[in-house]
Amino acid sequence: MKNIVIFASGSGSNAEKIIQHLQGSLLAQVSSIYCNNPEAGVIERAKRLNIPCRVFSREEYKNGIVLSEIQALHTDWIVLAGFLWLIPSSFVQAYPQRIVNLHPALLPKFGGKGMYGHFVHEAVIEAGEKESGITIHFVNEKYDEGAIIHQSSFSIDPGDSPEDVARKGQVLEHRDFPAVIEKLIEQSN
Image 1 (cartoon, helix red, strand yellow):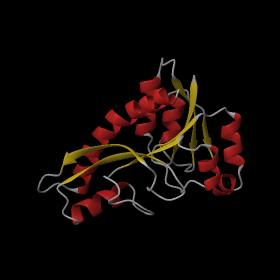
Image 2 (spheres, helix red, strand yellow):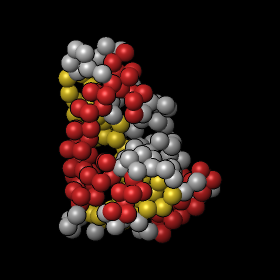
Image 3 (tube, one colour):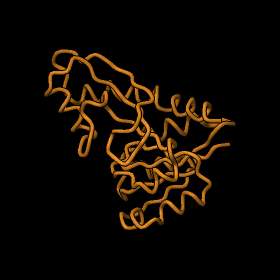
Image 4 (cartoon, one colour):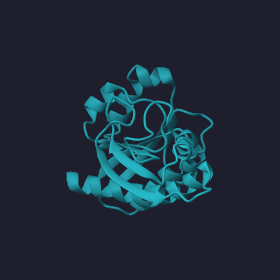
């Protein structure tokens, strides 16, 4: 049984979908959620789902405490589900090709520092794109530049707002992210 630790900063809807998808699985389980935002909705979701949730500071993240803790949990995979901080190279070295992120656009477009959530969707609309989607990728030391694992797209209709784009993308996130994670783990065994 592989242990997954989810890192999240926001509401946690993707974390919840992953946890639900893997319930009863003999392949993998989410053993813990790590959150850098004490106000995040993911904390309440974790309580409701009986998943331990650890809120941590930037100092604990940078000085190696968080990495030591997740290693002590016998973590096999790290999944970023709406986690907004850059992953330190110490994590990437400890978990090569074992840290997975979801980006709410079709990379390499609309990626990089500061490109998350509504900022991405606003940029997509502003650029006049005819489609957008999601990208699931491995994490390296730079924002949104790791190897792409999976992409799904949808059409942007005339008059779509950034909120419309976000809603369409979230449907793909909830459908694809848990299944892609499960497949990755299966293929790595």
